Amino acid sequence: MVAKVPAIAPTVDILLGNLEDGVPVAEKEAARAGLVTVGKTVQMGDTQLWTRINSLDSPWALDDLTTLVTEIGNDLDVIMIPKVEGPEDIHYADRLVAQLEARAGLTRPILFHAILETARGVSNVEDICGASPRMQGISLGPADLAANRRMKTTRVGGGHPDYVVQGDPPAGADGVPDISAERSRSQQDLWHYTIARMVDACVTHGILPFYGPFGDIADTVACEAQFRNAYLLGCVGAWSLHPKQIDIAKRVFSPAPEAVAQAQRVIDAMGDGTGAIMLDGKMEDDASVKQCHVVVELAKAL
Ligand code: GLV
Ligand code: MG
Image (cartoon, rainbow, N blue to C red):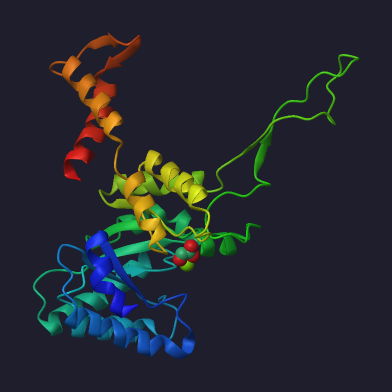
């Protein structure tokens, strides 16, 4: 993995050294040491270096923070904290990291990114977002969240064929609805509520919402659909668990040229942005021109 870092770094916005789930217990310390080596030796260019430390209730979190801030604090942009339950977790990490930064003589703060992956975390998401000026953003963690909530999906993100809305039954020959007839079924998004809640909490506190992992690496089509739902609801990015998912994320989280051109057309037609006009049979006004600015500003930023 370390050997691949120089080639992957220029293709992504963020590279994250994961120390938590996915790293076997016997290799926790070797993974931490490997990340220190990466921080000290690899040139990341414009790509940010993040880490996901072990959860605060684990035996490794204290050494993760102490070692990483002390050894590579200058190279680390953001620390991702998993399984955050409430603002108290952020307060604890905030104080500890402040002490370590001071001891290491760092001159800029390391930021925090929380994973939303417990029911209590979702209940406290507004307070988590506002718990420290270090808060950079939040990612949805659908796997742990499903387990913690006792949802019955065993997938890492994405939909489930049994989570559906059933179309109405057609009338039978006697005019009575025939519930045994073929009818439409629409699969629904298991993650809609949580993503929407996370986006609102992040925007309220001026930080960034991200979709998290999509575990079915082979199903690039479903991955794209899940990422696109998150993009449309306001997320700024998603994790890539495999290089295959990098291009999907870039495509989805960048507005399509036609969408940018249409948004610019509305902005141009709206003049000073006030009042209301009809364009292609559609009403455009102050609010819709603001929607168009979101798309154009994102395109410019990218
Ligand atoms: C990510 O950490 C998840 O649990 O989905
Ligand atoms: Mg998790």
